[in-house]
Length: 151
Image 1 (cartoon, one colour):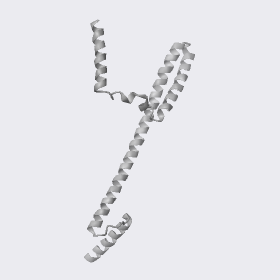
Image 2 (tube, one colour):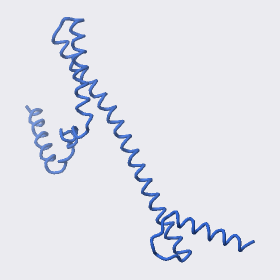
Image 3 (spheres, rainbow, N blue to C red):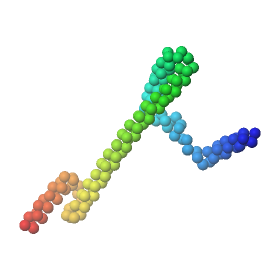
Image 4 (cartoon, helix red, strand yellow):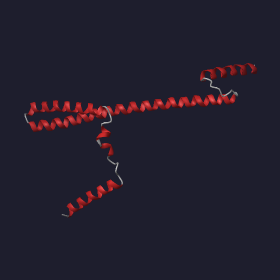
C-alpha cells in the first residue's frame, strides 16, 4: 500500500510540475509537430505496406494469425521509423545546405557593399549610385594611373 501511495503521489507531483514548469517538455511529440514534414505520411504508408507484407509472409510461414499481426505491426513500425529517420536526415542536410548558401550570399553582398563604401571614401567619389563593376573599372583606371606615375 505504501508503494502504491508513493506511486500516486509521484504522479500528482509530476503533473503539478508539468503544469507549472515544464509545459513544453514533450511538445515536440504532438501531432502537428510531427506531421509538419511532408515525408511523415509517406513513411507511415511505406511502414504500413511493408508491415502488411511482413505479416502476410509470417502468416504463410507459421499459420498463426496473432503472431503474424504482431510481427507485421512491429516490422512495419520499425520500417516506417527507419524511412522517416532517413527522410529526416535528407531534409536536415538539405535545409542546412540551403541556410549556409543563403548566409554566404548575404556575406558576399555585405562585403561588396563595404568595399564599395570604402572605395568611395578613399577616392572621394560622389555618393551617386555606381554599380560594383563600374566602381571596379574606376579603381583599375586609378590603379593604372598610380602605377604609371611611379615609373
